[in-house]
Amino acid sequence: MGWVDSFSTESYTSRQRNYASKLDVESIYTPQIILNGQKELVGNDETSITTAVENFLREPETVTIDISNKLVDGKTVKVSYSLNKLVPKSTINAVLVQADVVTQIKAGENRGMKLDNYNVVRDIKTVGITNTTGNIELQLPRGSTANGFSIVLFVQENDFGKITGAVKVAL
Image (tube, rainbow, N blue to C red; front, side, top):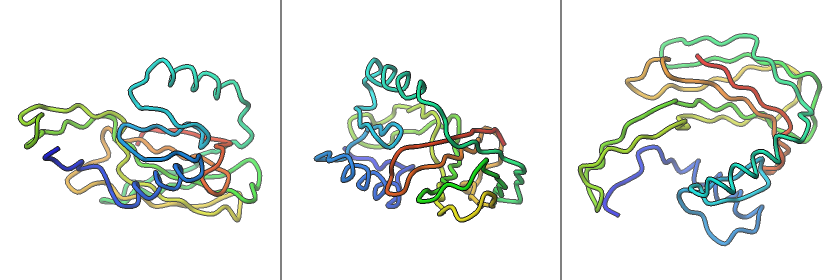
């Protein structure tokens, strides 16, 4: 379409492909949403998304995550966490989320327009769970400060499965 998504990375595309394979979805696209590692939806289908989110929120959280420390050191965000129990065959994912980013579209049919982007993933790390405590480091984007960023941690069954616990904190 004449412009490149400046927030896309090969690792994000690979993650999306893995979900598509697990969920037996024929293709990946934008905007595509995967909810709780279990359901794929078109990202602009607000009614279906709202219904699915409400259904998933009725399920009990089985893992509690506590962020005991967060430190911004230059461009590195260091997060210390603890889990209420050891969760075998699961990973902990740490996501650095930027609340609001404006993108200038410089080419293609939307040239000259501004695109408001909300809750943009700027970094993600996935670590196997071997203990109830740990530390994860994330990287702020070049030219950014911690203002407007949050950290989301979520425990997920291996192979992009069900999410069993999550927490979000502002930097």
